[in-house]
Length: 139
Image (cartoon, rainbow, N blue to C red; front, side):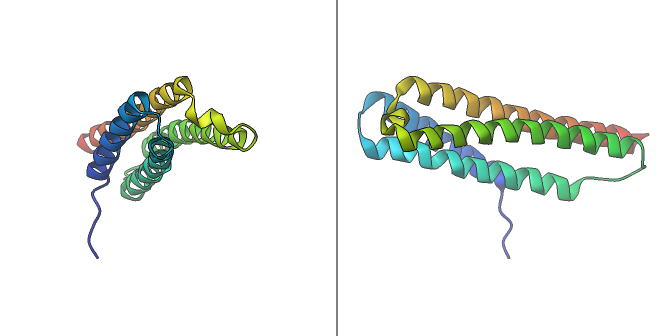
């Protein structure tokens, strides 16, 4: 079985997201809008798999400090993921009643910014947990 590099796939999907955002803003085509809203769940899936990969590799050196590092990481990622997914689901639910909501340029730009903030939060959380674990290993 071949291992998947989630960071590379996240970079590729983010490039696709930026390209689709530019195309959405330049062109008024339903397929481009659909492409943008399809890339978002792909990014969600990649980020969840990246979080799962780090959870598997988490180190338990001692019971006190390792558990606090893991708990801090889990709390931040759970809260960020919950709010991000709820906002996405609210947009999709509202789209049932108003089909034009997914074609709103302001919503697309705001959700793009929200996606970048969500990714940044997860990446920073993973890096902080790794740094704290390395500090704990060095003691």
